[in-house]
Image (cartoon, rainbow, N blue to C red; front, side, top):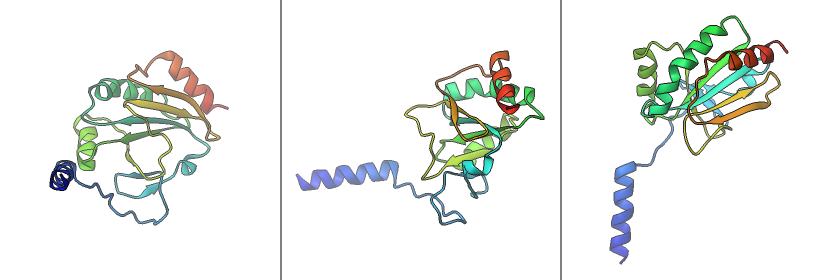
Length: 159
């Protein structure tokens, strides 16, 4: 019986491995890291409206909504809205290459130990006002290029 359990655990470890996050240059528990593996905290973005999107390159609904997020970003150019695209790809390089290949001009971030917007499914989107308060939470795919969302984000940016 013990042999069966040991073999089962070994099979799981072999299949999925123990994922060790690469070391970051800051030893504090981080909310997220950028594509250069530098720590980033949401407090660094205080004073801006933040559009957070949890996504992955292997997620069809994430891929489907990405063009509307790019369009939204274009409509909000020159405003105090920051786009934080948090990839849940295990292969970080693949996430960055995905953005480049598809010609999306988003910075790619990865969740850290203290990432506050973990969800059970993706895509998931959060809008945070200039004071750091979450004002919108949406799990699932959406068309973010609508006038309603553009106007909501502009209003938040002008507060």
